[in-house]
Each structure stands twice: as C-alpha cells, then as structure tokens.
Length: 293
Image (cartoon, rainbow, N blue to C red; front, top):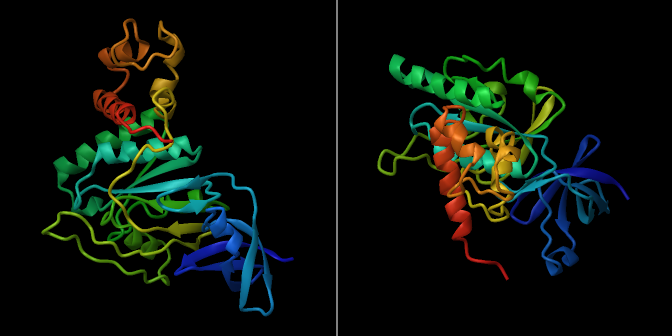
C-alpha cells in the first residue's frame, strides 16, 4: 500500500501527500475505537481506489507530538511573539518553551512587530533577546511590514518541519505571508475591546516555505503542563538544568530546600529572577494539579 504524510486536517478529512499527489482520506473506524487521532505531520499508510480519495490504514510511529497545536513529527518550533500589540509576554514565552522543551523539540524565538516600538520599547525587547540568547536560544527580531529580519529566518527552515505557534494576534499569518507572498493567509487586527488577537487560522496545515515545511496553526493564549511532573520541570529550564547536580539534596525542587544551587545562582545574578519566578509559578501549578486516574 502507498505511504505519505498528512499535510492538512480539516472537518474529519486528512489530506495525504504522496509523491506529487494529495489524496483526501478518512481515518479507519478502528482509530476512533482506540481513541487515536491522526495528526498533521503523521507518516501514514493508506489505501485509495482512485487518485483523489482514500482511507488511512496505519499511522507510523511518531518522533514526537504536540497537543495544542495538534501536530506530529516536528523538527523545530518557531515561537512567534510580538514586541507590541499585543505586548511581549515573557511569562507566556516561558510556558511555550517548557512545553516545547518537554517534547524534545528545538525552539526558535521570533519577535515580530518591532516596527511598532519606540526606542525605549525596542531596547527593552533587545534586552530580553540577549537574556534568552545567553541561555542558548536562537532569537530573531523581525517586522513583516518593513521586512527587517525576515531573511534570517530562511536558513532555519531548510529541510525541516517547523511548527509556528504563539499567542493570537502576534502576527503568525502575517509573517508567513511575508515569507511566502503567494500564501495570502487571512489576517485580522487586534481586538481593542479584548486586548488580544482574533483567531484567523482555524486548522493545522503544512505549507512549503523556502526549502522546508511550515505548519500554520490556530493561535491560543494558554498552556497547561498536563504531562510534566514537578521533578521534571527543572530539566526544561536549560540554565537550571546545568546547575541541578550541584544542589545538596537529591530531588531538590529549588523552592524551600537549603543549599540549593539554583537559588544561589539567582541570588548571584547568574539566573534571571523573572525566569526563576516563572519556574516557581509553574511548579505551583503542577503541584496543585488534580491527580489523573
């Protein structure tokens, strides 16, 4: 049977690209029975009576998967955050980074709309960019309007499957339109009443941009640490992970324990206070999470 990759999921149909053809497929009933949902990015085996319609018969083993946005086999996540309108949120960025790190996906931070900032605001954004770069993350400052920084994105896309994710209204679709002028993805202005973006992307789809595949995804504004345990959280803060072995007590959560290397690094300015504060906030959420049965 032929094999291919799901490049779009919409209204119960899965569009499978095999060679140069795209076949509209449905999933087998056994998937629903076993609570399995095919995802964009899945490598699948399918059967087709013609060159237009078919059924997905098997889903190949996944390298990784995300819940929100629902996508599999991602090489890297391009996290889009705006410098302004909506305001840059380090807290939300750190939430994204933890989720991406926990799925062993390489994150790239892209800050858009730098054209909207004044000198003071731009310097503040650059300060955050330097902090995240020092931790080890790639950070790019861009504008879809002026084109600043866009050329620097293309090398990261080459031969990769990238998921583009971020808060609603930060300019994900505008950025993709700027990178690929033929896309003409729908964009909308920020809601002044709500103070956040309106959803313009309603499904996940892999799009050919540069020499890679990029997934445009529905925007969202919150993330839950459903599959992360309290003793794992440290590993998803790189600057804490590298100091974890220096803590006096095994299984240190870097909260109330004495002689904690992480807390000492915060006091010495080696770890940013805001990052540690976010860690404590996320840890509290995980500890207060209702147990799953």
